[in-house]
Length: 274
Ligand code: SAM
Image 1 (tube, protein in one colour):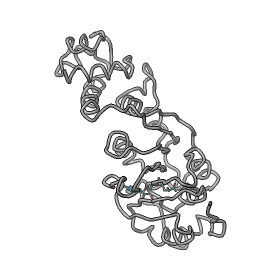
Image 2 (spheres, protein in one colour):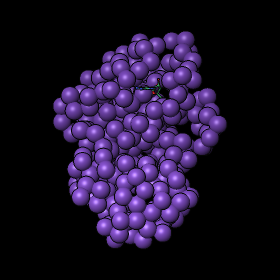
Image 3 (tube, rainbow, N blue to C red):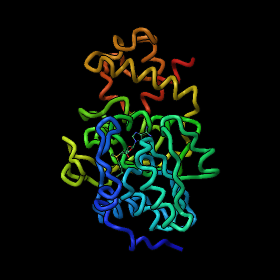
Image 4 (cartoon, protein in one colour):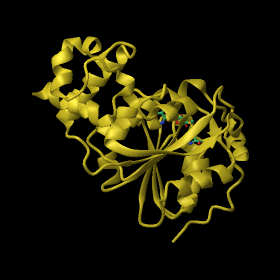
């Protein structure tokens, strides 16, 4: 069963009725066009029988679109000013929407969802990358993630070896998930418009995600290798074993980080574990 929210006032009117303005400190850039939020909800491939955790519902444009799919939506919002508006939306949603006031960085998704859940969010830019790393490497593995980032961050998530955007984020994202950029969104689509364009990335966690110790080692290797990305691995990885480590991983010590595919970094990480 899906929920009909067509009687709700336009988002701009809801914001005005509650006297709400965007706050920069919370990374607030709102999507007030329901055509865009419905498209994101479609890209998320959620519907009846699914649980969705939405981070940062704000005025609730994406939240409305997610509730309309028929999914159960748990919305985690840090800015308490939005509580009255979102409580009204929850009341109109026939029990499909639950509001959780708090910080998504420390939220316990497993306890919240009580089972499998997808994550969908127009992310606050200031905490987008730490949240992504938490969901890709932490104890709760989402069914899928459909996330709006600054376009530059989206590029870094899906970058292939050799690309200038290829770095730590690409390696961690792609070793733990299948990541695709599925939609670009111009700055003018947001209220207020940010300085840069945005894009939606869809990530589906891999069943064969490396175990925590290997992920830890991978974080160390990629931090060292891309920390000095123009240097040869023999030099950038010196403290981790230098040329001998590269050889143990079957890689040329003269190669540079940006040319090494994901499997190469995994081999390096394994070699550090002995
Ligand atoms: N989803 C809304 C939309 O698309 O119009 C708002 C998106 S806005 C880019 C980011 C939202 O995340 C804001 O509502 C902001 O208050 C909230 N937020 C910021 N930091 C947060 C955090 N650490 N945990 C939960 N929500 C947060």
